[in-house]
Image 1: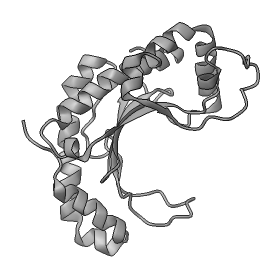
Image 2 (image 1 turned 180 degrees about the vertical axis):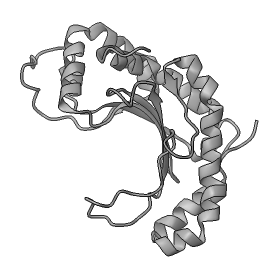
Image 3 (image 1 turned 135 degrees about the horizontal axis):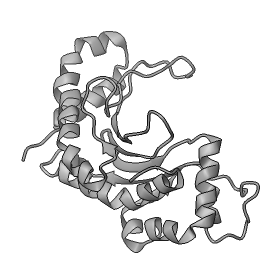
Length: 227
């Protein structure tokens, strides 16, 4: 058992936040590789059997390009913020069919003082929202078992956009209306920095993914995906 990240990981990310420009990043790219990118890719690799035990249809993909790890380069084409780099690192653990159809994911976010594990569907397209809402309308007991159990609520918080008004065509008095009207179907839980820098990071992430699985399973069912 070994650690993945270290104080140098957070030191790099904090410094990048203060020096978010190409010259600085180029001069410190070796630190990025050594203290952030390569350890994260190793963690993704090590999480493969843990994720396979949760669902054979989910992937922890350690390929440096096109895999689970998000690129550190920001897409600034349509952003007011033109800084070129993310000051965090994240990985998406995705469904095998996610390239073909919308699918929920597991997620790990690394940033000093803001590390967390999450899962679900963030900003799904209107048609995907409609399918999930309709499934919740017809299958309320499954949603309640998945995300309203004491065990789930102790660990996770549902987050994302929630309009005030109920969506058209859905009864405002439905028992799940507060969740049906969500635009995002995601839940997350913070990870202490000490866990992220310690020996039990892989085990902690795997345990959180396992605890998130009932919600991911439900969302897969809503979208006719295997879990």
